[in-house]
Image (cartoon, rainbow, N blue to C red; front, side, top):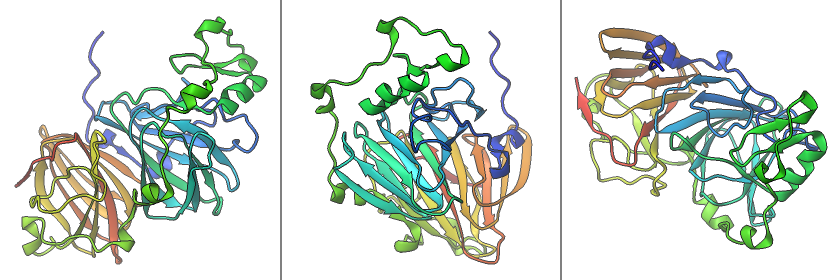
Length: 345
């Protein structure tokens, strides 16, 4: 099989209005109060169980980027992941709760909040704000593995013709799919198996929440800040980032297979041209950002706005400038658990 053609820089931009959802990406979507959930795979296939899920960018990045929307009062069932799961609330208010029975704790998150949920911990979330709600998500590794669902999902979904195989393939018997043999289907967990999942206290989970509006961030971490147009506030949220000064530590330190930082800048400010030796993904939270990228003889100048996403190849020359009248914030995910190297151009 021939290798896929490299993506052009323009193909690495996925705008909010171009996101393509799947309304039945997971086995729980036909259960009571789970309907209306829309799942998005922006970069990588994530953990979607439905082969009808659209994936915008399939090129491996070392992590996956997705999104989710839920109507008010609806929720995503308790489940566990094998790799890191991180959410950024873009719109609406969301209640996260966790534990194999959902009673270990809960926290209400608001726009701008980032939460990193420990692996091996059952978690769920509910939309408790307006219907205008959306979250961006990052999942660790190129292959984040399969979702483990609470027993009520596996048992209840069968009543609506939904089943899961051991390799996380969704079977829809109402739509004509043949039901595999019983030994190939995912089963409910035993009590002993449930007790093996991590328990997280409310204090531990709240400590894994970060919002740039509630923290001072750092200045003076980059050489271009002394030049006109280089002023910014840098927020190292997860893992080893790409700041030139290694004296500051991120809010969350455990490995995720990627790092996450936020950059806040006033009008006319941002990053001067530079090179990063790892792949990066930009997600705009607020403001209008003018992004320039040069790679392999190709140049792209692009304006990005809230909820737009862009993948930037390793070793590309890139620069970012906030061109809106107000403070703008963008989030930068960088592949790998080792600090990336930055070179000024």
